[in-house]
Length: 97
Image 1 (cartoon, one colour):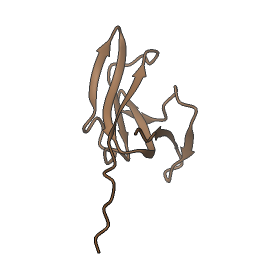
Image 2 (cartoon, rainbow, N blue to C red):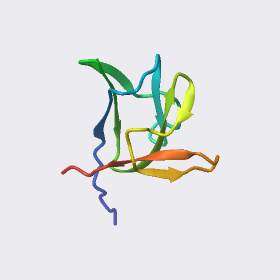
Image 3 (cartoon, rainbow, N blue to C red):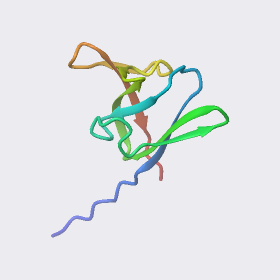
Image 4 (tube, one colour):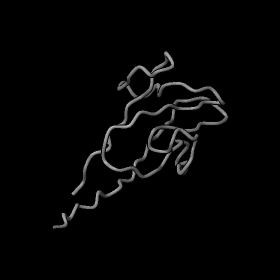
């Protein structure tokens, strides 16, 4: 007997930054195998930097790479300690029906 599993829909995620002073802003997390800006589109909209990607619903850890320095997202209060003694930011991707 086969069980049909519902296909989990990937959601578009848009993170917007407007107060970060840097030359290069990248995003890495467990949604893209911790490869900076892998499968992440960067858009500049009205002077704001947007990082756009898709992910399945769930909770993800991520970090920003600002001018080559890995750090937690200063705009996101949701955080968790990582295995390297630093802090990762947490992102919740909701289920949309």
